[in-house]
Amino acid sequence: MRIAHYASDLWAPGGISTYVERLTTEQERSGHDVIWLCHAPSERYALSDRMQAVTPATLYAAAQQLQIDVLHAHRTLPDPLSSDLALVRTMHGHQGGCPSGTRYLRRSGQPCDRAYQLSGCMRMHVQERCGSCRPQKMWKHFNRLWRERAQTKQVLTAAVSMYVQQMMSRAGCAIDNIVVCPSPAPTVEPYTAPPAQAPSLLYAGRIAPEKGLHWLLDALGQLDPQVVLHIAGTGTDAHMQAAHDQVEAQGLGHRVRFHGWCDGPALTSLMSMAWVVVVPSVWNEPAGLVPLDAAAHGRFVVASDAGGLPEYVAPDASALVPPNDTDALAATLTRVLGNYDMIAAAGKQAQHHARVTFSATHTAWAYEQLYEQVMAHRPASHVQLAPHP
Image (cartoon, rainbow, N blue to C red; front, side, top):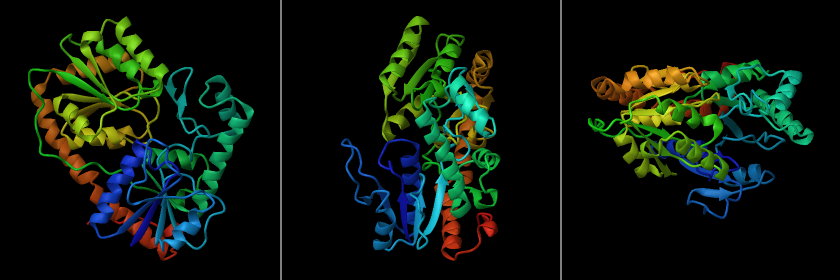
């Protein structure tokens, strides 16, 4: 099968590129021919061997010229939709259920579980700044939601979590045309236990208010002074400065290590040192690649009980905490860090979770079913994922 994965920013580092890289690797291993289609990459990144540049106006013509069997989109498809191509979409974020796409109330710093409602969401844009309150930009946000809702009626859409599917349904998207297809975990490496004499935490991700690093730093101040926090990630200059300022203000400089953006080997090295990987998001994460990375490395996860994260953590190697509850986060981390034997034993359970429940092989196999059904022009209401053999 000849498959094209499309996103305007497919070249950019982050969740979508990681997702597509893992899925593509497995699809190629299964004998499929895969191409990436994106808009012209930024000056920092060159086109890879399998990548070609397109524009919204040339996407469908390019796919036809390349004799693509299935065009798999990871962002909104250009309108009007092509009737000559088999189309599948993956909904990675909240654009199909939230006008701003954030599900995060910026002023109060709380996750948002509201169902979409025109006047209510407009009011939240102004009161909570969950999205821009400038009329033109606000209109753009709402128009995007309506466009996503319209495309879901026409294009089979795979949501990355049940939470995303439910929020899309509540916003008026065609639930019969949305299936849940979880994100793929990385390859599971041979298990190694964390170093017994050096209790440490790892935060991996963007440094931004909604990611909750400030909440984790508050909790760190309540933990045993021997516990060290490693931070793998970057953010805007303002957000980075705010994080450094908080560390200094709380006297945590000797317990916090900023590592900046980390590639695969560097992240693996940090995972190997960590006792616990913390995912303290205070917004509703659509899914959770970091918990899958942690599970593949055999690491216990403490995460926010928000969005799609509960669906991604390993049940026997994780703990969930209500967002923004500093005392609960500190108490949970204290309990977990106080039981090294439990952490070490849970690591093997975590790897089983990554290897079986979220394997890239399973994800690729599920998508192959969807591709075949779309190519056969089966009605969307009949689309179902059969059990994995």
